[in-house]
Length: 301
Image 1 (tube, rainbow, N blue to C red):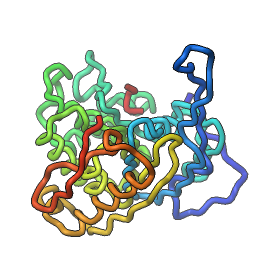
Image 2 (cartoon, helix red, strand yellow):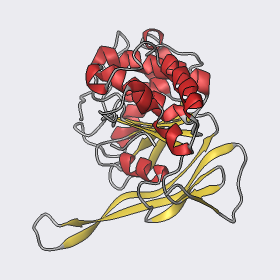
Image 3 (tube, rainbow, N blue to C red):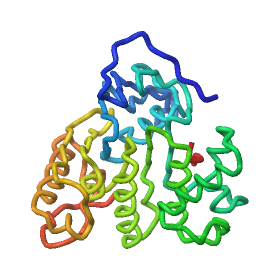
């Protein structure tokens, strides 16, 4: 189940992930019911991501963001092209990647600690060591004291922090996050964004973060990859040269942050996304640009 295959190909040591000429095509039923047609979800997608880099991916609904993450995670095969992690081609799920989804995907019959220990159990880590490691990551996400709670006893924000701790506990090299904060309210979302930035500063994991929010993409990332409408291609790659560490309260009033948000928004509009499709710029302060917006598991392994 957990396997990578070495490719006989050149590899640049500075890069953790190398996505090469990815293309994904689905067979879908025609609207008039007359048969099936090909739907190109992703086309000619190539991207290199450095070790320890935080990359956000933003684009209109249906542009292939989640399909891309599924391929990197090894949950779906690519139609053509390849994804390499540390020079090895992705051929299926593997413990070198952690996944955090929007719906938490916690096991309801397991406590916080036992949820966090799940990947460690798969790796065969002894019980005493599992407890030490899980305690470390429970503390990292500020949930010390909740180790014996069950998911139904936690708030949405707490559940998502458990999911993050679970994905980090077995020490994957890459963390894949698919709209992980979309299901919580605005204030909790900002708190989780700050928590994630703090965790990233401590762990320096390579993170790919899919989001429908332009603000969130710019706030969190070193680079923002803007995808075009169908088929999903790279429309723009925006460097977020705002320094670290960052915090919501400071970035919302930063002129450079406002300019980055505007560039992302313009890139989306120039590639033909409609107002309904373009991810939102949030109402966050005096530097807000006018924009018509609103668009709208797997276990963490």
